[in-house]
Every structure is written in structure tokens, then in C-alpha cells.
Image (tube, rainbow over all chains, first blue to last red; front, top):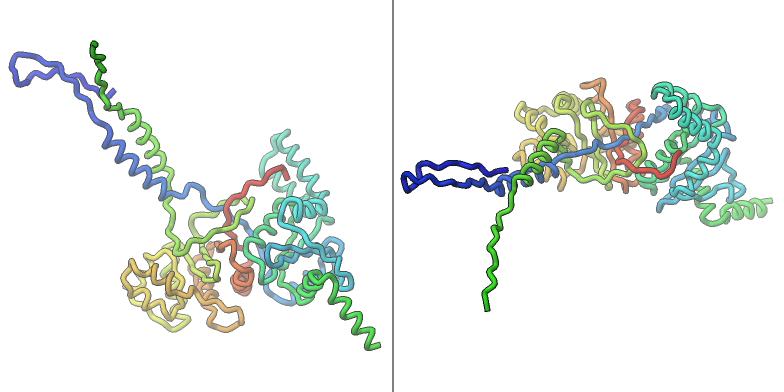
Length: 222
Length: 206
């Protein structure tokens, strides 16, 4: 390819025509290309980072209090993100009497996700059907989004309240938010930890000792 | 015994094909590349399944290190108005020279009181000094007026109304640090923002 046949007429010996084979050495060229290639490969960001959009409730104290009361107890699930990647949850109102009302789960597929999918199965199955329909009927993306939003706004879908303790990490929070996306839960909020929640976790860790203690104190008073 | 004559072969390899390939790859990388903006600190972000891409412009990036230090990065066009706004609020003044230096730096994260001395350092030393000795942008949620973080966000919003806020935090940051940032943003009624993550693939169909 890189050989050029050339008729050299002006050789040392005049009169004798010599066929010369000129070969261009491409090695330096390849070297240089490789260098540039390495430079570009190291300096580029091929994929743009992903983001998650969240909207937080405003910090207006009175408003959040009202909103929280609106959450029907039967629909609410409260997640408490604890230290060392531990996560607890309770449904509805916290039950301070019974320490087993708070349950521990994990961030793994069979933990939090399984629980949320089970609680949200109505919406999840509808979304699944919608996805199937989308593939079969070639629904437009806008229509799919619209219908998915309608399904997710269902009146019976669970509402998740995420409460992160100071010992939990940012990764825990993102994992929890991620599960909301995966389990098609549209209504969730990140709420400050209440004192009662910390107590619940402590009570859980001590297997109901704190409740017993209070009971004993009450008995003594009587 | 007759000598076995080994035919001498030329060791030169034809590099043309190789050259072709490298040029092709080079062209590809040159055309697709968008350069990585150098960040003052390396932050390992958590992964999520979210597939929303972050826009390239009109972004205020809040970089939170795992120990809670905060840095900020914005579009070059927003930088100078922001600094002027914050400086006016805290009663500092910057010369044109200092403003030009500020314009050229990618990320910033020092208390406003130290900004002047930092901007007067040689340009190539600024980032290292900021990272090694800096304390990041002061943030304090105990409702004191020296919450400079709030002042910066407010100034950014004022200089660009279409700005989006993106939080890029290390995955092992304690929630207490993130909470400070989030509640400061909530106080400013910045209730919508993005959290930067990397893509995680999820097995199964949900």
C-alpha cells in the first residue's frame, strides 16, 4: 500500500535506469497517533452523569405539619434509615407499646424492594400491563408518561415517608429514593427525624426493654 | 554437511493498516469528546437507576465532600455577578483583576473573608491551596446570618433565573451534612433540585 514505484532517472550511474522501491515508514506516525489517542481517551467524559430529580416540601413548619396529618395512616409507610446501612420501617402510626411494630429490613432486592413492591402491587401490576401495552401498540412516550402518572396517583398507593438519622449516609438516602423509582411510588417525602422515631429504633435494638421500663415505672407510681 | 541456508526475512512490518485504525479512532474521540472539568476534590457519587441527564449549562453544582466541605461550580457567565452580589452582602470589594481571576477558576469554596487573599495568589496555586487549607463554603443552619452558602445560592439565582441546582455528594457523606445543605436550600424555597448519581443497572423488569 505504502509502496510507491518510482523510476529513478538521476542515479549515480547515468544512463542506467534503476527501479527503486520507496517504502514510507509509518511507525512514527502510529506512535504519534497513539499518543494523541491516549490523551483524548483520558480527557473525555464519555457519559454524562445521571441525575435524580427530587422536590422537597417547603420548610414552612405549619404547612408540613398539616400535610403530614393528611397522610392517611393506612397508606403511610415510614422508613427510618439507621447507621451502618440498616433500615427500619413501620406502617401507619408508630406503636410505642409494641417494639415489634418496627421492623428491620435491608437495602437489598429481597428486603426493602420486596416489601415496597408488595405494598404497591396494585400500581406495579398496572404499570407492568401498561408497559406491555406500550410495546404491543407502539404507544407514544407522552401518552405512556401520562397514563403512568395517572396510575401512580392512585388513591390507594402507599405514601412513603423517609426519615434519615444523622448516622446514615448519603448513599443510603439515594438507595431509598431509588427504590421509590423502581417500585413506582410517586408519593414520598424526606422528613426530619422526630424524637419518637429515635426512641423507636433504640427500643427495637433493646428488644422492647424501654417499653417494659416505662410500664414498670407506671406500675410503681400506681 | 551442507549448510542450511536460512533465508533472511525483513523485520519491517507494514504499519499502514495500523495507522489507518489509529487515525480513525483518533477522529472519533476528537469529535465526541467533551472535556472533563477538573474538580478540586474527587467525589465518588452513589449509583441509581435514574436515567435523566444533567443539562450542560445553567447549572449550579454543589460539591459536597465526605467530610462535609462544600465547593461550588457554575457557568462562567454567572460567576462574576455572583461574587459581586455576595461581596456586597458581606461588605467586601474586589478589583477587576481579582474578578478576572475568579472568572477563570472552575470551582470555588472558601469563606468570603479569605476570598481576596486566595485570588491574589498565583493562579496555579489557587486550587491546591483551596483544597489543602480551605474549609469550604461555610454553612450553618442555626439561623445565623453567616450562612454564606445561602448567600451564594441566592446570588446564583439572582444572576440566572433558569439555573438548576445539582448536588454532587460523596456516597459516604453522613446524612447530617447533606441535611444542612438540603434545609438551607429549603429555606431559600429552592425545593426542586437534582442529585447527581451514576448509572446502576437493575436486573429484572419492574
